[in-house]
Length: 151
Image (tube, rainbow, N blue to C red; front, side):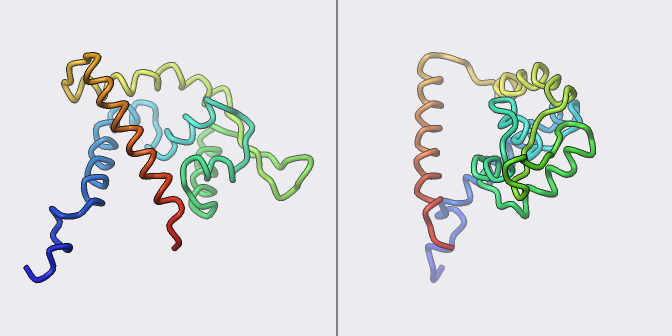
């Protein structure tokens, strides 16, 4: 091949893409049982940590633009998971909070990471936990680097 850098096997991006799709696929049964999509699950995780945050804050945490997150939040409001209200101090700022339905999903959703481990049939040992933690830290460092890339 003339351009080795264009071989799929030489790409850094492809394994990330593949892992992301495979994890999302592995979560699908659990997400279907909750009646939500993976992006909605991510928003819920942000809100379970901290409620009444702005659309911009959610977008920053999930690395999503406002024009991507707004329709997602509207759909979540339509199915009764969240409320969207304008901030009293700034009419341009929209605050997102969980409804009782959104809050009540947390207990069931807490099993999703454990279900993924079961599906992967991975033995949990101190070494495997340390390896996963190391991988997560490396990925977070890569995210920090890529967030600063000019578009």
